[in-house]
Amino acid sequence: MGAGAVCAAVLLLATGAPSTAVAQTQAQNQAQSQAQAAQARVTLNPAPPRRADEGFGPYPLMVVRGAMLIDGTGAPPMGPVDIVIENDKITDIIQAGWPGLPEREGRPPLNAAHEIDARGMYVMPGFVDAHAHGGSPQKAPDLEYVYKLWLAHGVTTVRGVSLAPHDIAVSEKARSARGEIVAPRIFNYQTIGSGWSRGRIRNPEMAREWVRWGAANGVDGIKFFLRGDETPEVVLAAIDEAKKNHMGTVAHIAQPGVAQLNAEQLAAAGLGTITHFYGHFESLLGGRTIQDYPTDYNFYDEQKRFGEAAEIWDEVEPGSAQWYAYLEAQKKAGVVFDPTMTIYAASRDLMRARNAPWHQTYTLPALADYFQSTRDNHGSYFFDWTTSNEVAWRRFYERFMRLVNDYKKVGGRVTVGSDSGFIWKLYGFGYIEELELLQEAGFHPLEIVRAATMDGATTLAEPTGKAPTFGIVRPGMSADLVITTENPLANFKTLYGTGHERLSPENRIETVGGVRWTVARGVAYDAPALLADVKAMVDRQKAERGEAQGGR
Image 1 (cartoon, one colour):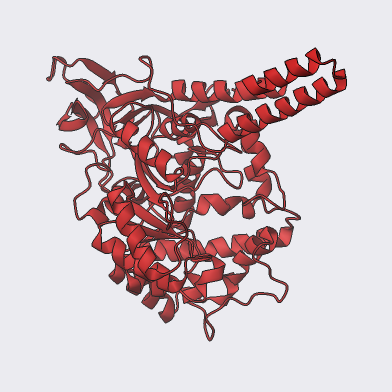
Image 2 (spheres, rainbow, N blue to C red; image 1 turned 180 degrees about the horizontal axis):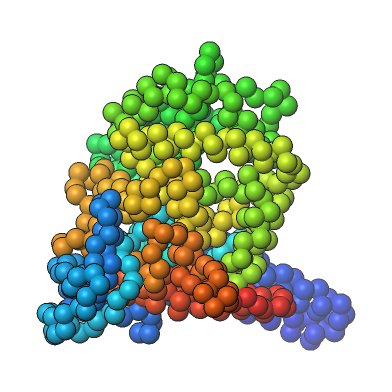
């Protein structure tokens, strides 16, 4: 209770005012306190400082010993190798022996401050999530929760589109770069108008001003939706200005804007990345430029919006001359496809997504609430999700997957993004599912690792005009590594934090896999320990709610 409220209550008692008046004052003050508490939670909570027991390093010299290396370039595995790390950089990769023979004992370097015994393990570059969000006060208010789920699944770099409100994202990006928090490397992409004090973007001139302001204030790139204030004139001006200021661009080409600017038109204007599937098939419609929407379509009706999104599947012709001409034009323009198939996968099999084994242990109750179907929550669109809906989405995925795979075949670049935190997709876990979906699309596992590492890093560095400093296990690159006990090329399921179940030769069910170590800029994190921290956060929220705790 504030001082003024206390004085008011004392005055009422002193003058013999009825006790009901005091009760009313107390109720008012309680409501005020609750309102103030709610106001304090209107934004995300930054990550706490990194504790001394969270990760080890960076060291002047650390060696990862005896690993099988998948370097991220598409090259086949090789090993055993020793990976030499000095502070936050890889400085050497040394053959440690020959397959089937004992490794050489006493091999240099011998004076390492720390060694990781990776014999029998696989090492890849740290993963890049090219489409990431950091949660929200409603569903996941603590960025620590999201960061640790990412790192526990090997994600060492994220493109936040956006990660958080501008001021928080800029601060978290800097704190992560300084090693002050347990977090991936952060790229800060924002929507037009975010962060500055001049209000909404009303015209192309203001769009250009905001881009210049963003470039000077920690914005790495722009995320477009093509609706609302993002008119074609505004978007095209912002793309042009972004290129001048060495900023990246990525577009979710929403249905309200795709009739004016589809993926083909945006590519011609210089857009960097198309995320999700929107805009591709609209560029391939035969005899029309707009999808065959039913007359009762309403974009604000989320079941109608997402249900109809898949119905375009039979309005395009895979493998046609127009199909390949489109892909060649996109490649020539240098557009990156970031398909994020994982985020819509529940649409083709809702039961599987809703009952994923990790929800019980690692999904916050508040986030589970957010996932539940409702008419006023974005992405919670399963009002009455039918067999017909799921069949349409399966048909759509068949053709979308072919488009993405064909783009890779003609030489186009594809990245791995998850967009987790919506539609029953949990941070980290959703990223691994995207790897599986790319394999279903026809990618070789080595192509998938390349998309998740080198290609993601190249995409983020390209707008700056500089070569990437991460994304490949190579001397001179950032010491970002994923170290796994199982061969991920044989089974991406072994990367899930819940592991993979299989039957042992002794006829017993065993759980194997999970990332063992994630090294981010020379700091090695125990992935199971990160997951234990996440479980503790979930258990605390369950206890606060009086819910039963459980899970692994």
